Every structure is written in C-alpha cells, then in structure tokens.
Length: 326
Image 1 (cartoon, rainbow, N blue to C red):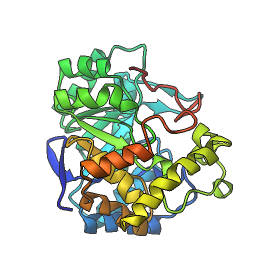
Image 2 (tube, rainbow, N blue to C red; image 1 turned 45 degrees about the vertical axis):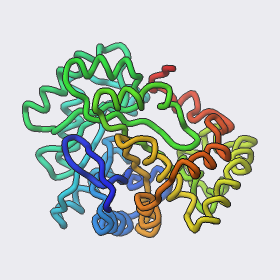
Image 3 (cartoon, helix red, strand yellow; image 1 turned 60 degrees about the vertical axis):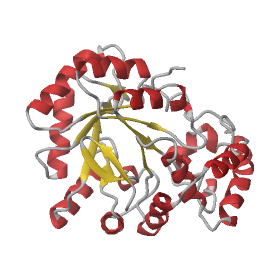
C-alpha cells in the first residue's frame, strides 16, 4: 500500500483493519476465515490492526494472537479497555481495572507490549488527568508504546494532551456520521494526534449490495440501531443509491469510495474498516488508490450532504459513554 499514515510514532498503511467482527458481533465466524483475512491484510500492506478486550470478550484478541504466533508478522497493534459488561455494562478507568485488562490483552495477543492502547470509553466521574497518569505509567513500564482515547470530546483531548501526548483519537466517522467535524478532527490535527475513523462504511450501509435486515443474525449490533430500523433504513437506502450509482459510473465500488472519502478529509485521518472476509478486504484496500479531486468531492457532497442520514447513529443504550460536544 503506497499511501501511508503516521500512527503512534510508526508509519503504517493508510487503511487499517478493524477486527471487531472476528469476535462474532456481526454473525458467526471461524478461525480459518479470520486467519485468511489477516493473511490477506499482510499481502495488501494493511499493517495496522485494531482490536479490543470486549470484542467477543477476548475472542478477537486470541485469534489475532494465534495468527501472530504462527506468522511473526510485523504489524502495529492497537487494543482498547474500559468497557465492562458485567454485572451491567459500565465503564472503569481506574489503574487496577486498566492494568488487569491490559495484562489480559497482552497475554491473549502473545506480546509483552502493544504499540497503542486506548481508553475505550471514559469513566465520566474520574478526571482524565488521573487516567493519563496511569497510562503514562504503562509507557514507562514498557507495556504500551502510545496512548489513545475513543469517542471523546475536544476539551477532554486537550486536557489529556496537557499531561502527555495523546497519539490517537478514535471515533465513528463516515459519510453519514460526521460528528467529528464539530471539533475532534481539528483538535487532533492541532495537537498532532492521528484521528482513527472506525466504521467508515457506516456499519455496512456503504456496501454493494445494501445489507439485508432480515439476514441479520441474533444479537447483531445493527438490529437495535436507529439507522437500520424502519422507516429510517428505507430512507437511508434511497439517499445512498444515487451515490452508489455515481461510484459505479466511475468503475469504483461504493465501499472503496466511502473509505477514500475519509482519507481525503486530512492527512491525519486513518480509516479502519472492519471485515473478516479476505475478498471484501481486497476491495476496501483499493480506497488508497482512489484520487478524489475538488470536483469529485463537490459532487459527493451534493449527493450526500452532511446530516442526510435518517435516525441517530446510536440508540440510547448504545450511546452510553460517548462524549457529546459541538
């Protein structure tokens, strides 16, 4: 992959790989399928892999760890902690919880260090400065290379960065989820942090063909998501179809252009589309080869203006822990 990005002090391919689906959140999978996807990622030069403790409650990390043990691949790994599902879903950022999670992640990954460690969700009652002191301690111990946060507000980022540089901020960002444009994108650029865009495909809405609601397996995250319930879903499909047609006219897939659009929002933006399919990954990697000039970007903006999506990006339950700003 010729196009590159800087992440946690390392140069990586401009398109990363989100590994949440390896844990089964979008339906059953197996290790053979996941291994094939990771092998294809290496072949394509996709060398930043993003995972989290909560993805399958360690399953995604364990699969990745077994693959790395077999291949000894040189990749930049990010993992996350801070979301705990029992006894009810809650967030903890205290030193004890984060250390226990990090040590568990390292064991599953088969590593003594991870390049980037995110606080997956902030514990609102705990000062971010205190959390940063814990994370800086992990750096000093050699357990992590850099610090990241997920779904935080610009002011939180600035407070954290005043203690120690924050390498990355991760938030949902795509053609239909533009919230980061209200401040986090700019704050990351100002402070020299990489903005890592998860779900750049809108959880599959920018795929060919559109997702089939009736085919969603039990427990699929999207089943409770407002944008994937009617009448919102039909409205969203109708809005996106002209964009898909625009892509086809140019010989591009909808998914590749959607990712390319995120890449064109700044040299500090690194999208991490999620898939467990090697075939799909080959398509997504083409995004790094698509050049969108001012004319193309203007045409896309006319077809899909900011705010076009019907429905909130999260349900009330799904939005817990996401910092609101703007």
